[in-house]
Image (tube, rainbow, N blue to C red):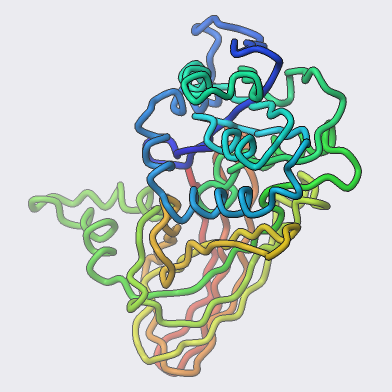
Length: 358
């Protein structure tokens, strides 16, 4: 993947044959039959999305280092690039000595990727296939390595990981490697009075009118934005661990308890979720974090506002449960539930909250 859709996440697909021409294995070209899920792929056709992802140096540079510093894994091997986008990961793989790379992507960006591959003299090494991984065929029975930038906002938004798991089960040979292969998601809490007012409480009085009917809808939609590390009030707790070598699609619908402790006396207006990804099956493990304390990435962080702030004192604990599953109407959206319990000296809360990331 190379860049997220306008306000969400992105992908960079690719595939291979023995010629420079991209193969189109899409099942239909009738726009009248498109659903909301199909427009996800169309959003990745625009170059701006890929520009944003490519300019994310944390993302792109980590993949580049993980691939190029491990030539011993790539030399002479067959690679599958799931969601290849502009083909950047496919080209890294060729630089690392791959015998051939098959890049698969369902969006129109693959036509530009074909030209990019040819312009860089790699058309004999990279075959691009347009289509959905679940529907296409590869000209090989198995691959040695799968590379993919599948992560979305809140790690799982857009459900692209399901596609990677499908490719793993169908084509990855025994002992094969997935790049990256591990991911962990965390939750913490922070003070955000000013932004909560601008984003949520704003609806209480709009030019003198009561528009609070929209406040509930605003509260239910998580916000993807940068969180100032100085605003973090509590410790963090991990809520999801993913091992791409062994996890299944069922593991991506999860429920996890958490316990976080106030590190100073302050107010808590929202929870924040972020993730880390790692390449562990390489000579020297490598990874990156999307935490507020880390360098900027296009994934930013995911914010869940509370209707009323918590008044916390240093050392007090907030406990709860967070659950996540794909939305029934559009599986690329996420339904997220938060149960929050706090029994502090200055405020008490026992609340169930529901959100939808779309």
